[in-house]
Image: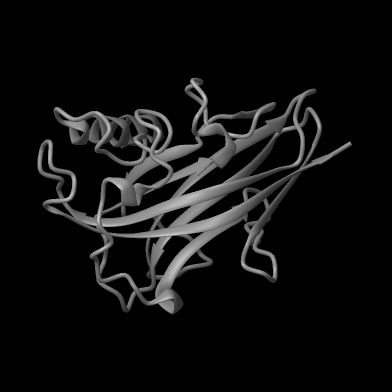
Length: 201
């Protein structure tokens, strides 16, 4: 299956999960289909992925594959103004844990949630894939045998871009949401990480 087919399948999965209640879904309910500030508005955190030492939430440089994690646990993405930088969003858990079925994530600027725009990413930044819902099964040398999803995201700070702080909101899930009842059927755990965008002039 090609990358485009896989991405389309993930998007269709999200659409199906919307059911008859558009705001009860992941990840678009966060600030896009509703003004919810996090997944917990619609979903309970009742899954088995509670051990942070086995949870994998990482952002890697797309070229070097090095983690962009800072000492305080946040992530720093530095980009020269007008230039492109691709990073890899890595979500999942180690081989010892129960494998999730799907991972969902969203990069969101909390200050943009209440706005009417479709994009909730930092203003002035171009981005091609700020959210996704993907079936687990990707591989990466940095995380051998782990239950993960890996997708690239490319960002570019335009003329109006400024340094910004994002939330990377993550869900590890198993099962299926009940139509119209997002808190039933789906087993999930929620995580939030801070992502700092820095413009280099």
